[in-house]
Image (cartoon, rainbow, N blue to C red; front, side, top):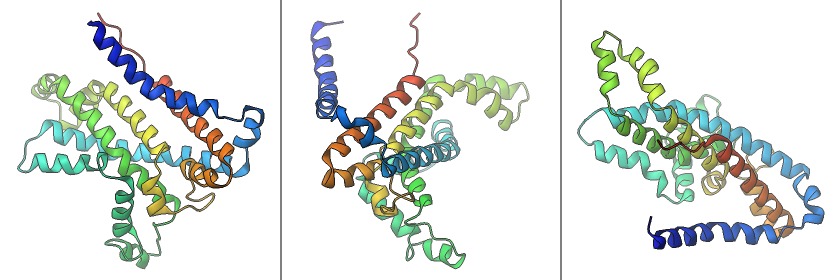
Length: 254
């Protein structure tokens, strides 16, 4: 590997690591325990973990079929559909929140129908899960779709010629093949959901114990208690790192 590649790679790593190190240096370690164990902080962290887990499950349920359709089928307008599916990757999160509010809000496209049924989605915990799913779903779809394209369809074709039904092929052949991509996508989706801020604030608001996730708590604390904000930000970074390290295992090159 050329040395200049290593130098640029090291520069990129420093660009990510140095801000985290700078934030770590600002932590008030003498009062760190009390800063991160306040009732509001603990409530926000637990809410973030619950909603991120729920949104990850929803991403799996919706994302795997979407990735399979994009990778294994051909239909008119496929590029446009794929672009629409991946649109939240490039949209500002606040725009996603406005879109969700326009759809599920009290006066939204579907919100009025839910109101008739006595259901209010906006500014509820359900809204948090939907906002997190909206921004995290493309990460899972992209990961699984890439794995499907890389693995090819030969094993599925062989299973089909041996008489396996499409459902059996999916559960017994396709799903095991894409498991590495599925795990990676789920981890990315969880991490993205855990750090979601803009769409959540716009669509769900900031109600303590209901919609105020840890990123929202950090934002509020930044105005009133900067030391608490930095400490909570470090907790969020630590949780994200633990999730990534615990789930991602390096592949052994043969």
